Length: 309
Image (cartoon, rainbow, N blue to C red; front, side, top):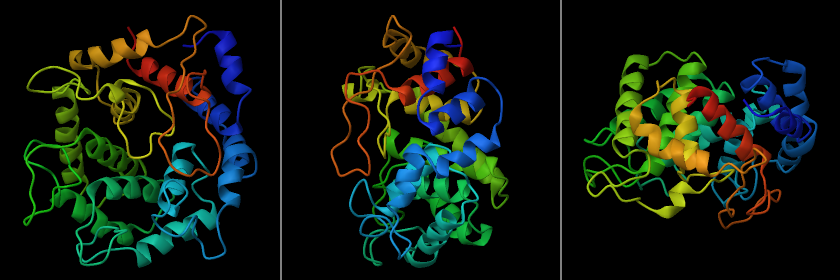
């Protein structure tokens, strides 16, 4: 648990941080506090950017990061009230108009394959905002067809024309999060198969100790050990550990390298700093790189609560 000073700092921040701190670190569900996310701070700012056509930015996927897709993902990440009618309307609009021939939501031309990374994220926010179960079936079907032979997922894997044989940590974590939110929300379609797919995806991440090459043991990319919020489609160890915790994955020694990095990044004042933001337009500026971040600190504390020393 954070010190009382850090806890007070988290609770005194944006109402969305305060809500998730109360829920995840203090174990208290405060629905009134969650409702305020729609009318105050970051949540209200994101909602106000929604256009009269029901989209953000220039539509479903453009531009990054102010499109409907990435705005809805961020709304889900800050625990925006899931029954909000305007946001649910936007989710329904995407599911009704943005599916490709293969059943996946698809920002590209309809003749191009859909993307497992995009669909993992879409399943995440659509499930959070209680999309119609029938509208999610084709997304579930699509994702289950995209599992790579190593158990994970890769956005470049398109059966049967363009198969790849090694998964991506980026795509895999997006799909794990999507499946977890879908299952936590009580959707039942192909539940057992989704649980199995999530299990093999988790095993893929663990075989890589979250950020290491399975072949050499070296870090795949140093960027994976830096901490970001929001992470968008990118993987880092903080996001990976948080996804495993949310999925109820028990402690495994193959998490230790990533947990060690996370512990090493904690400042003496009990806070964590955020790395530079990924390039692209945003609705609001994030925390400055190299400065303490309430969101990163909250998520890190949430992970360490799930996986204590």
